[in-house]
Structure formats: structure tokens, C-alpha cells
Image (cartoon, rainbow, N blue to C red):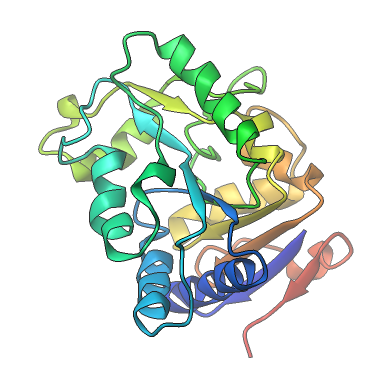
Length: 256
């Protein structure tokens, strides 16, 4: 794993965007794995800027999102479909027919989950997947559990996740308690992964992810096993790390 520690959120977003640009320039028909929430918003703003400046095009790319709330229609203000439309898809030239987000209102969620993984496989698999990390160590909506869920599936959200996401809703009682999410195996089959972490509140999860055991009780810890992960972490999120000890395990770069 390559760990890049940066000064702040803005630098984290720029570094991630540069990796995405390199991916698109090297392989214009890349399959991208995308995430939602506040963490990747800076990344999307940078990619939109590069697109507007004529540096990159998403015309030949395909995108698969990590997850969606169960029970929210696409047009709901807090659906992840709506988030992606407002913050990325409508601002670049990625064709609508190659924008994929799991449906949280499918009549048969099990079939929707199976078909989502099948669709990823049919497109050749994900070339570059971006991830955030929850305070409880979740990636996607893979919550702490007794086992790793392999494939796209329905997950019951932890109280911590519900509390963290309540800021996006008028009341915590309105936060969905279920989501459909790529599973750990689906994520781990991505050829490359970028994990983003910003803010002191992510410090404990980052510490456990990098220096703890690999366990489904901290889903992000499984990334230690992936052959091509770049973790871009700002100083606040890295505040609990023992950098010298980690240098024996990872390639680490520090802010200049």
C-alpha cells in the first residue's frame, strides 16, 4: 500500500484527481468505481475543472457507484443517484447509458444485487475504485460484522453510520436503515483503489486500518491485502499514526 499524507482536504482532492486523470489518459475507456458523501466531493470538483479545461473526457468511460439507500427513489433529495447527478454526472460528458448506480427500490433487491455484480463483470471489471472510510471502518456500506460480505448485498446500517449521515436529513428518524452496497470481494477485485480520508474524526479508523489485524470487524483492514492501494490521508486523519513504525510496512510520503 502506498500512503500519501497531505496537508489538508484540498490537497487530498487534488492528488486523487491527478490519479484519476492519469487513469483516463492512459485508458480512455476505463471503468471507474465511484463513491458519494462529503469526502469525494473535492475530487469531483477537480475532475469537473479538468474536464472544463479540456484536459480529459469521460466520453468512453463507464462508472459504477458503490452503494445506494434502500427505499429512496432516485429523485429523493438524499438519494445517491441524485447526489451523483448534481455533483458529477451532469457536469461531465460521461454517457448516461454508462452511469450505473444500484437501485434501492428494485422489486427484487437480491436480483438487483446479483445483476449489479454481473454487469460490472460484463464491462471488464473496475479499473480504479475510490473509497472513503467511515468512523467505524466501513468501506462502501460494508459495516463491521463477523464475516466479510463478498458480493453486492443489502446491509443493515450501524447506529454510528446512521448518526453520521443524519446531518444530510431533516431528522435522524428519516435516515434509511438499509442500503445496497458492493461487497468486499467486489471492491477487492478492482485493479486499483484510492482510499481518501480527511479530518480528525477518521483518525482512529485509519490507525486501525493500517496497523491493526485484518478483520471484518474493521472492514477497511482488508485493503492491506490488495496489491494496488493508494491511501491519501490529510494530516488531521493521520494524527494518530506512528509513522516511523509504519515505514517498515508501507511506502509513505509526507507533505513537503
